[in-house]
Amino acid sequence: MKFTVAIDGPAAAGKGTISRAVARAFGFAHLDTGLLYRATGRKLLETGLQPEEAAKSVTPADLERDGLRTQAVAELASRVATIPEVRAALVAFQRDFAAREGGAVLDGRDIGTVICPDAEVKLFVTASPECRAERRWKELTASGQAADYAGVLDEVRKRDARDTERADAPLRPAKGAHLIDTTEMDIDQAVDAAVAIVRKALETKG
Ligand code: DC
Image 1 (cartoon, rainbow, N blue to C red):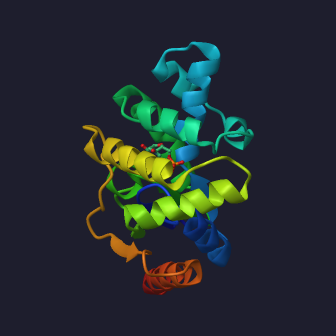
Image 2: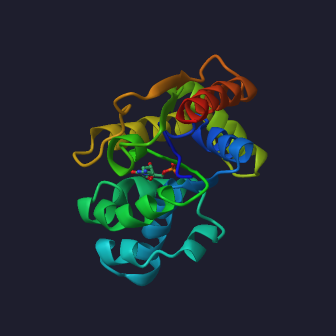
């Protein structure tokens, strides 16, 4: 059976946690597509390849490497993600993943709009910038990274601006996407809302 769940939204809205929980609940495979952009950014720094070549050279093993989840790499990823050749070079990898047997969850910024516009379920997960910055700040501090709230909020806003204002595949809700605003929800409520939407779509598909 092929069944694709496309989950988009801004940084630190809860997409990652929701995506992993949905994948676990239904036994689907999960791809965090932000890692493709993070790995591309890192390859650029390490190899001196051109952006398009760096994106083409990304392998599944590159997505498993340590150190991809730092703020510095996120910033780099958001910059390389504005380059149309980089985005184009990463399309096939994502579509192949989405088409696998047994179901797939992909999360990112353009999954429902560009990569999988025919996904069985599209979710747009969001929260206020202040709420997302607070969550990110707590995560960073808990993992021992130095961070101040004002600085994290500033980075969230800058990344939002770059992700939503870029010309190629800007972040926005796909047609037919279910909106989940997690500002006033805890993570269990957000996961329950997403799982309920996917369950209904699976039942409808039969
Ligand atoms: O989801 P993330 O924070 O790991 O993503 C890092 C950056 O990668 C994000 O700021 C924009 C880019 N990105 C993208 O443009 N399209 C995607 N599908 C996923 C991520």
